[in-house]
Length: 162
Image (cartoon, rainbow, N blue to C red):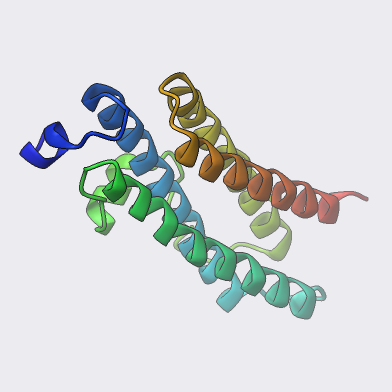
């Protein structure tokens, strides 16, 4: 723990801030990994649903891109450095990297739906820590992230219904 992290007096213990920051670091890694996969699929989607998926994926990767900064800044506000390398994200994320060969459109949708569900689950895990520590700003951020990921997963799953 850094000297600054120990000295920060915001009403949350250093141990709680550390645990929350570690959880947020996992959320940041998951979010960035999902962003990169979604952007990859935007570039590489083909087939009859091309226009719909290409446009949908753009909206999704833009939302994910806009999400990483508030997550990283909350880690910093809690007094810890935010991870920011592919190596760090690879160690922290539970999401796999995008497939080396772009899958078919339907598989892309399946992978992204599962990715959003997993990121929502990560956010929910960290929410429990934030809630127990009475960390409302983090809890608010996490509630917003869960809502977005759960809705996005639902919308993607709706595309898979026959």
